[in-house]
Length: 132
Image 1 (spheres, helix red, strand yellow):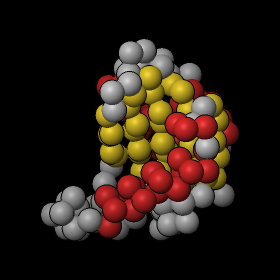
Image 2 (tube, rainbow, N blue to C red):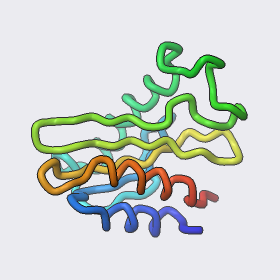
Image 3 (cartoon, rainbow, N blue to C red):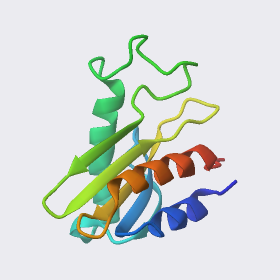
Image 4 (tube, rainbow, N blue to C red):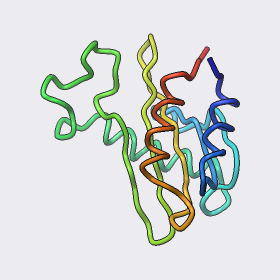
């Protein structure tokens, strides 16, 4: 089971990957980062995407019928995709045995990346990620 560094490096092997982060959406801190960051500042990227993730995770509108994951430990939102003119930002919430407040963020070049493949692989990476 891969840890943080191995998981981020695995994400960076995806076609078109420009940067990857593991972020705590409560604090906005990057627990790990690799590659480039939009605007050149990985910490600012982590903080800004944490705001987006927090709003999505806490939104009653986006929650499934019961308001949370099937077992109460799953985040209510599986992932978010933000598309810009030249890139994709894929945010994948990570489930853990404890109250999870982390997500993987992958920044993909729109011309070189494969969003469907990235979504599948990032989900697999998040499922294998070992925190602690």
